[in-house]
Image (cartoon, rainbow, N blue to C red):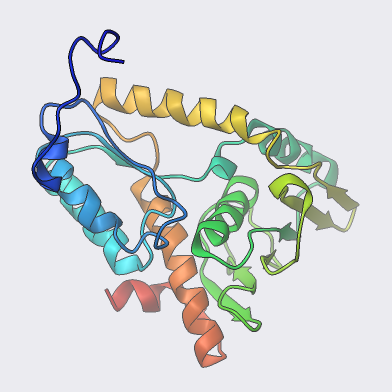
Length: 254
């Protein structure tokens, strides 16, 4: 390794020094404490103007997501966070079939599991297929975000009846997720979106990271990154309070 990287690894005395003299900070702990520590991990590099990729989830609470974006803008540092499901080519090809339906009026996402890391996959797949701009959410189940309904309000070119995320759906084939779309013309269903497909999304993300480093610009909308976490925050609150929660409510509580 030292021959490849032209020298011996440097052992840092403090966590803050890890981001010294590097081209990219890559925070890869999606199955750790569900993003609760991402603000802490990302801040030193952002303050040094080092491009930063934060593995999903971007954050656990929307207030941390907003703070990360504010830091990025303050220090003019590009940051990026997204799920593989947001750029998976197989999901894009499925979305291209929506023309068969005219325009989807309702959608279903199956998969994700009961952790924040899995919830973000489900939310991101919904964003990929049906778009951003969620207005409110309603959640139910024995665990937060077990079953979540995304409501887009009256926004054009969004499912009028919303999108249902079925995260608590039991075991699945090689981490596969599935999607369905419905309209008055019929229904279409996705193939497996799982372990054998995910490497193609990883390639796309690495290309985006490289472009971010070279251009100094994030390749993902900050608004969409925040919305992803706002949906999760609102969903947990909805399940707890047993009522519909508008995204503006959690965004204003920051």
